[in-house]
Image (cartoon, rainbow, N blue to C red; front, side):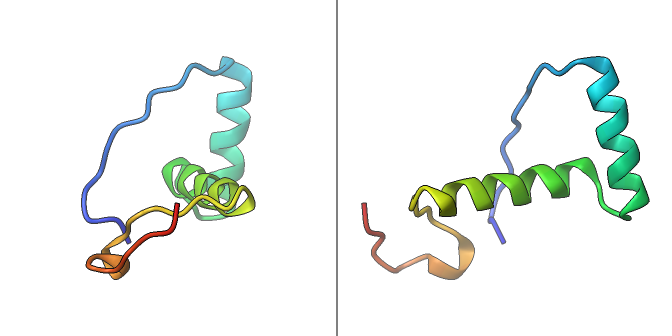
Length: 62
């Protein structure tokens, strides 16, 4: 889990936002949880590493 939070602001079509929020609610997830998971998966897909609480003090590969 990350040690601090940062805000990410996006613009999205209102209809897509409503559909996304409804789907998240149906899956008992918050939109933030889903977006964080999507970001983690996207970074992993592209081989990007980043510092997390569990890797503090270890060397990251670039």
